[in-house]
Length: 266
Image 1 (cartoon, helix red, strand yellow):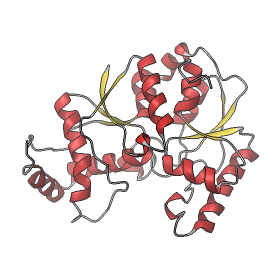
Image 2: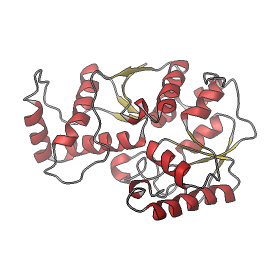
Image 3: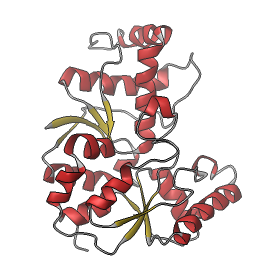
Image 4: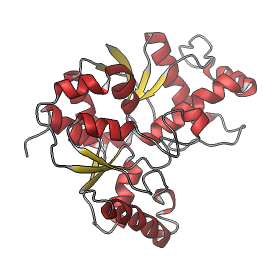
């Protein structure tokens, strides 16, 4: 199976393992990630102002590239996924926004057909859950993570706004726990797994970010987790830097790669 792939900027710098292991695991599971040519930064955050068009055009161009390839668009970074999914929803639901977007796109050097929001946008976790299937992943595990107690940290961007992202139940998500079980580990549910880590205010209000991060890691530790996994580079940074070092924090692709036998040995 082939899918269009949008890695995003952070996966080229601070989050290389998130990208590297996503690629290796996809190959092991029979999925080819076809990186979009000449992609640009998604914008980093979805700006809700309706008259702000320019920063959303890179996401629209990625959506168009996937449409023209006849493939779903897959992202791994929670932030990129949120921006692209919300942009796609805006195109589908706001005719004024759609008209402005296509007016901009018509001025491209090589303009494409107008975009109407018809690309399917999937997070890599949705690809694993809904396309590959956790049963298939379990069959491919060669190094089961037996005895590990792993907490899933969803954060904000995978789940909210709930009706637009439609990733999982925002109040009681199960997707990452399902993956953890497929890898042979025990998922640890804890109260703060879908609450904000404070990452977006870590520069403006470091003490608040530290407080939020400590609450999350303490919540997971209190329920017996020996580590946390996340899909968000911003959450990863904040939990590691401001979380007090109470728990090891990994990208979800790292235990996946270890269980599938495609991780680096060092």
